[in-house]
Picture 1 (cartoon, helix red, strand yellow):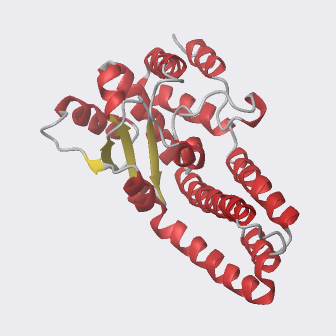
Picture 2 (picture 1 turned 180 degrees about the horizontal axis):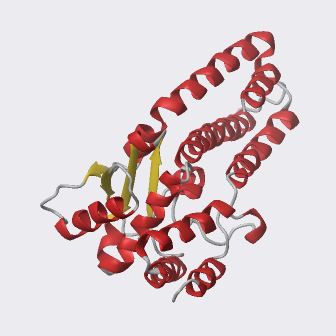
Length: 272
């Protein structure tokens, strides 16, 4: 990723641009390690759950952590009608599980338990650091692509066709989101199967997680054309959620998650 930023910097600004891009990449590497969880929580406006607000959810979460023999992460909530959840942080001691308000309102407590166990499994399996860093880098790449795209548009309106290589800039603007997608694909989809399996071992109730996945998936399908969302933000962080908030697109091959139907099938095969 550092080489990618440096290459773009050299192309756009020569040796000066290359040095600036290297400094930017260095800051991104250090910042994403130490602060990616705080950045992601901030952009989703997540807050720590008040114990008086959802006592049943907090009690269930504490019980899950004891079953998993884990130190209890902080439990956050963010405002969204989209039922979903994610985990973030650089290690188990500095980890957070975040639930959407939609998840709590649309799912039964047993199903929420399954979702929280899945996120605890990501923490236990050390998935959260690389996922958080990938989200930060994907967001930065999307930002670069957006800047280039609007620069080309406004440059065309001004009739300025000689400032730089228009074709090269256009190529970068097209390739940058694809690079971001490849980064997310590199976060192997098998980690979702592993987290599902680990969650089932923690709760001993794989059916509840399967039911939760089915409900979340159906909600996304039913509200695909009607719900309000920040597409650029979701595109950068979609691999972090239990189910990608973006459905459809370029197909299963480039999805950040395995097919929900396959996940449900594997979970139900674990049901005793």
